[in-house]
Image (cartoon, rainbow, N blue to C red; front, side, top):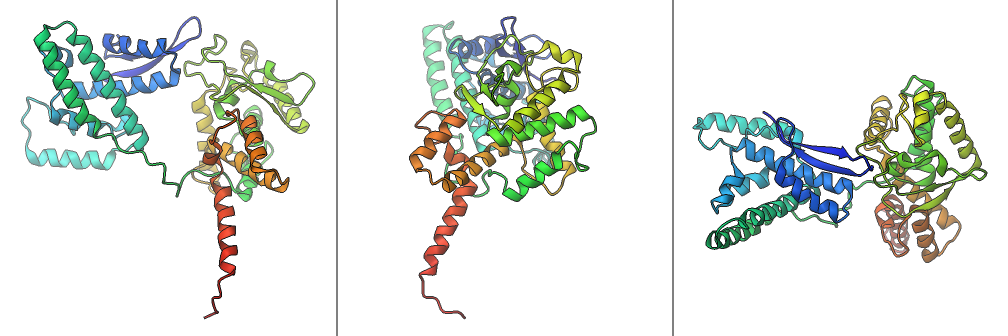
Length: 415
């Protein structure tokens, strides 16, 4: 089945954007106009791509259902309620898993036993997305359908336009009722940092001279070790690490700058990794900076790498991609079963924040000073409460200690 695909594009000035490509390669005109509105409002490239991906899902579903949306809108008609219900159901699943078999072709009669069989296959093979992703998809699709209805309605006669507006508003209200609530109360099982034992094991495994190190080439071993060390030492995001340039390193001091460079012309990656937080300076121990400089000397041995300013590069010399970072941690999990099954680059950020809390307690910093220091190091606003997301393990341990202290005061005789 031909697919509609959300494609990233990079303009000559370095700006990143996304377009919805129809079967055959040409972009879908209406979605191009719609996404241009996000671009002029200065939305981030990744946000635009998320919208484009949701629209790709919508158009795949329309194609599978044999629904020609524009001709229908030009007749003053909108999607029916049963169609919108099926569309909402489709948004629950990963794009790669959608076969379209759960939607009946409008003009095709199929034996009911075969339908039940195919639905069982879909239920077994499809993987659900998290509720936040599902909610975003439904909202993006609803907004686009509203935009498209208004866009086409402007060309209709007044009485047809008014009827289309009424039906659209009524239908989309019912469609948005399918948006699942995204609970902020669930913390059990939420991502946490590594324990001290797990952190020690990870650093031991990934050492360049470790026999457990899953990579063969010397440069790759040195680079991947440095990636893990820098993430653990600074708590930066992987996108910030991949955006680091050699000129960001201080010439005589063990520190470097983390700078947001959205739509950089010097970055050849269509999906450009970038900083999400404020620009800042980060200081590291001299030993870590010496390791960075040793890596740079190895990096210079790759001729193609000299063309790019980015610090972290692949073994072919091009700047390393976000997918490659994910692959590094996937390989670590596969080759080293003792490491946590949820080990990712972002777990390093959680780990840094938990170690930061422990050190702040040892130094007896006040809550206000600790919060300000953490926000400055992580590039958050002064009044940010983001740290609560990254200190769950530490908060859980302290809460457990206090709870057990309270229980000591209860006079409970031994049984």
